[in-house]
Image 1: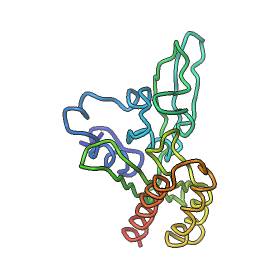
Image 2: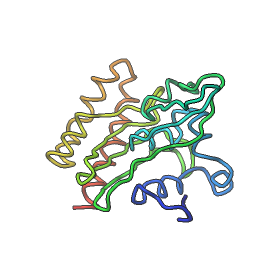
Image 3: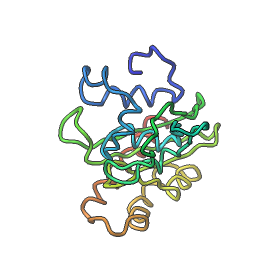
Length: 198
């Protein structure tokens, strides 16, 4: 993905994320599907595919495959919706328009490590897709629809002001310091989106 051998339907987001995962040997051997099935909440693909609104397609013994929304596919640390006899056979990723703007901010101790917090913002008004997400949380990534609406309607600065309150509303039982770390990651992603594309 990061070498551009395959088309990136996300206007560079998947390529950017791939480049920041571990180191080259790991990226060459690991797969997106394997990362999702492993379901480490701190893994980059778990959050990225959820932010994109991707669909995970799994095949079991039934004739018809099952389809899972990426944002709810991971149920907790190392737990997914996959049945015991199911394997991931494909991932459907929405195609972003050429007008799409995105930003990905990962907070970690050093480059390539699993994240302590992830913030993702996607604004594609042409395709009708605006998503904001806090990732690398203890359970499933946290989609922030109110913040996304504010981003779409009023821009990144207005959206940044809603992040902490929405995280507290959606995840009230999380540690306040941990929650604020995730809020920082999201706000940095929003700022990056706004400043790089203004």
